[in-house]
Image 1 (cartoon, rainbow, N blue to C red):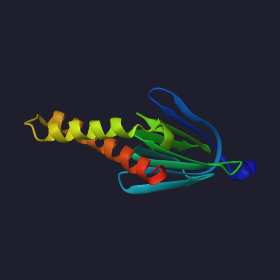
Image 2: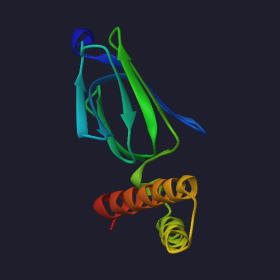
Image 3: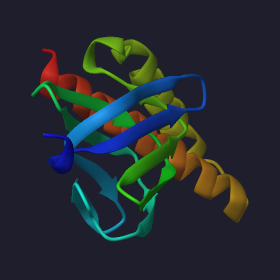
Image 4: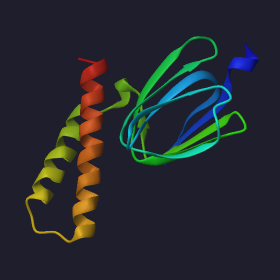
Length: 138
């Protein structure tokens, strides 16, 4: 099965989330979900907050919610660098709800363009974490 797999490394700002060989992977991008199989063409992508999932060479499906980041696929190796990456059971729903409330309150206040964009990013992260948590753990 070595011919139909590729090496994946997912690195969050606080930990190495995954290293090993996978059969397939899907990441969230500006244009929607982007899927990868072995021997994909070389590409560099911007990753949006959302769901990343991949299937390991032994058939295990791993799902996680990630923050903003980037990804490179070259020479049958993928490297994903993201702010955060959490499995469903690691997402703290209360903390995500509080972050969403803070972001919504900041949007109601007069802000510079930079502050506005940072607030939008915080809101996107919180919403993707809440949606992911509700989808996989009730």
